[in-house]
Amino acid sequence: MMKNNILEYKGYHTRVEFCAEELMLRGKIEGISDLVNFECENIKDIEKEFHEAVDDYLEFCKEVGKEPDKEYKGTFNVRISPELHRKLVNVAMKNGDSLNASVEKAIQGYISSEEYKPEIASSLG
Image (cartoon, rainbow, N blue to C red; front, top):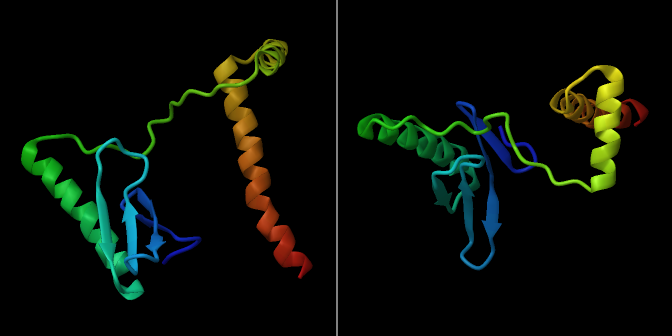
């Protein structure tokens, strides 16, 4: 099932885009360093094409003895202002947390608030 043009299969995701010039639907597996893409003309076939692209990628990796890339490894670099960095370190120290633990808590709070928003809208309407 497609939600917001995003499909998921076997832990891999894609955002489906429409190319008006060529009247094609396109996508690529997101979050991996290998380039795996697919396209089709019919919306009814897009999920099947994505599944085949993922399956082909996994089979290719198996054939060549390569470990398939995983979407997200849990590490990434974030650039913030020095002032915000200083404040975050102070909050982390005050709470007895590491900087990483504080960032993870902040992100979890943000994600939780974003996940809650659709529920509010649906309960109001």
